[in-house]
Length: 332
Image (cartoon, rainbow, N blue to C red; front, side):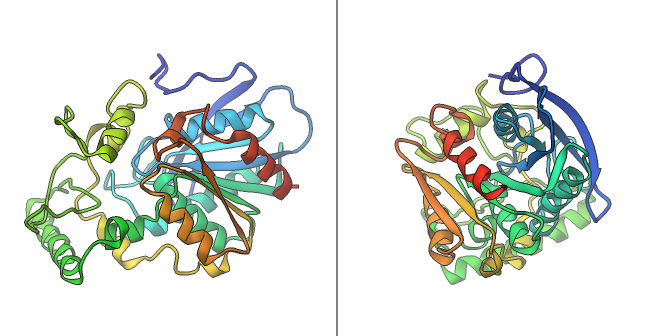
């Protein structure tokens, strides 16, 4: 439920929350909330958090940061570039490169705080920002450990569709559709909105839409659509700055994800990673495939009776004790 101050969760009485701003190496100002435990002396371990893809810091990442701060971490929940309260134009465009950089910029910010031990900084990402967090950890050795919840590899999702279901012909058709959309945007002087995971109907025709979710659910909806709708379009998780709650990404957003395969250098991930997925999640295979690719550095934790969206905010299902144990060990 959205609280009176715009957050979808209540701030813990033992935690302080402060709005902060910092810039990434592209000069874009990132908006974040810094969560700190009250009255904890000494240098703290720190975590930077973001996600899900299309969400804002007042939603799931803030809920996680609030819980981590309650447990003794300095936790920074931030809006990725071009979204929420962060800077960057055009609005609501996603970049796998810049979003990966945003995590390293968050490490820059945390490491300059007097109360943070810069040798004990990790990441936790949710849903679609998880791929960027893993990519950042593979390229930035200052990141000592990384955890993901309901991981999505957005490059794979956009360029190959769910369960890699695009045919070669469909992949080419999507690329052509995005390319022609660029002409439309240039000619109109505006940036159209569209589906970042472009589907096809039963007759093989490409589907377009200007919003991610309908105003109301149809009868007998797709179960995955229903679960996302229940979070983003109801009081449970809706937020006016969340792309998923209000509109859609810019229609040409998938182009960068065709060009930037997030998991290309997963072999460089030498820091420990904990991949948390719901047993009933439609996205579970992303975490399983990363674990299979990098079994020596990743650990896979499957949460019984949980689906993809449950790990956004169901504190009765999110394994915070296990996550705390993971970071306590690997940020020691």
